[in-house]
Each structure stands twice: as structure tokens, then as C-alpha cells.
Length: 104
Image (tube, rainbow, N blue to C red; front, side):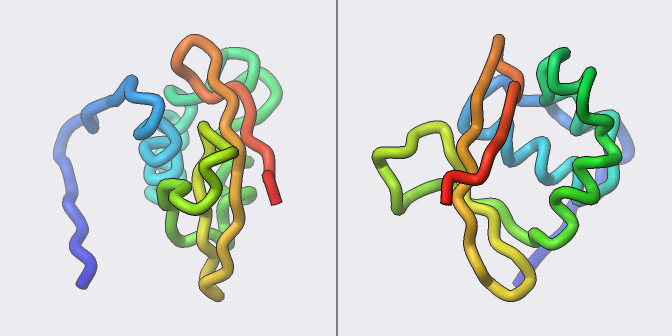
């Protein structure tokens, strides 16, 4: 089963690099682009409008820890609606996402 929790206030923010990609992805899926932008570095925010994140992640439905490729740290697995998984490498700068690229 899947449960959803709705807040009537600002969401709690994380600085944990393991949770930052998850928080950003969840914000995008909720179409809270201002919250998603919080997790992006100023440099990435300058070149990537948060609304484009919605387009980029549109086909993905889940995000998961990378448990399968230990030689690729700072990465997550995105799963699309057809249950295909794709590995993404995350680069951080000052605790924010500076870049994310497909590692496949």
C-alpha cells in the first residue's frame, strides 16, 4: 500500500546528502518547484528552471537508493512507469545538487 501525507505548512528540509535527491524528486513530483529549487545549487538553478525538472522527471515514478553499484557513490536509481531502472550520478556543491547525469 502507498500512503500520502499532506502538510499544511512548509515541509521539513534536509541537508543529508543521502536524502537531498529524494527530497528534490518528491518536491518535483508534487509540482512544488520552489521547494525543488531549494535543493539545487545556485549554478544549476541559473541554467535549469525548476519547471524543467518536471519535464525531465515526468516518466519517473520512484526514486531509490543505489544498492547495486557500490563503485558509483553519490547516485540514485530512478524507476519509470514501466519499472525500468536508470542510475543517476549526483554531484554536490555546498550541500546542493550541482549536476545529475545518467550513469548507465
